[in-house]
Image (cartoon, rainbow over all chains, first blue to last red; front, side, top):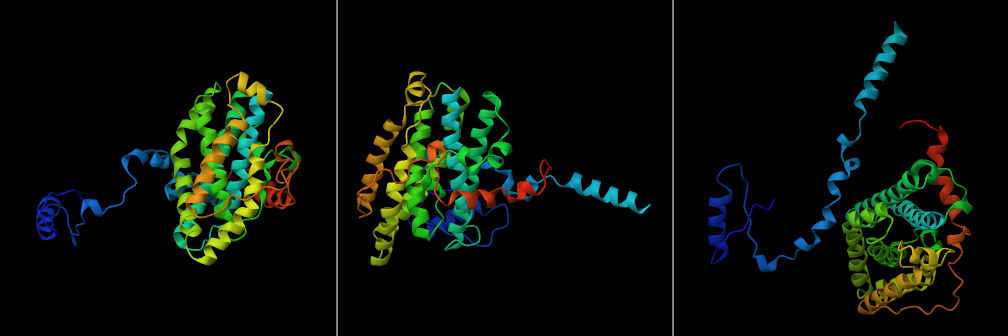
Length: 82
Length: 250
């Protein structure tokens, strides 16, 4: 997970700075650093590629409202049994 | 109204049918990421079809999206032949995607100013999705076109088939003048011209030749309801579940 950006003269110090800035609160297992110039990015001008993503609830299990149907089915079964 | 509907239907049918074709890669993609990419773009395309049918339903007094998608006969579909062809191997699918999506993104860009407001809104809303579809296609064309001898030969062969078919995207309908006059859509001719410039430049960059079109009637007829031999089987399969129990709520 990308934690943030640090300004450092070399990789080793970047790790030290990153440990201080981004590894001081929540649990961390490791840290890695990469030069910003080595990162090939989509760029914020393409942010619109993600615009509709939050609407795509069909990609999540929670996007399928089945609970009511299951409860109704169980109820029907009970009634059928009694 | 007829003019607007004609435009909405050919766009919706193209999206629905190519979406269905893309979905056929689910579980069969050459690598996992591509399996997901094609499945995800399939969902996007079917979403576009749904949105277009819904515009026709809400603004032009038409049936609802499900009825329009699943209960029309073959000759009522207005998709072009390009989208109907089976997925073939990955080279074919990617070549088709490239040619189709370059037309699609331009079409929606032209429609962003359409006097049919819901259509203009849709065009703006899905522009980011189309940008990604084009990025996906461009990346593979570049990679495979200038990859190995085999990948290059396969891409060239795929374009030799798909390029002439793609011209069917721009087959003109009876309402071209009306669409232009009413500022609904700039027209197929304009779209074709810009598409050709973009596509040819990218093909050249990928070291691929733009195929010569010897028979301009290839791939034509879809817009007036005459389809390739592949559409009936696709419709049969696509509507199978819907027909199991009409009107059921899933």
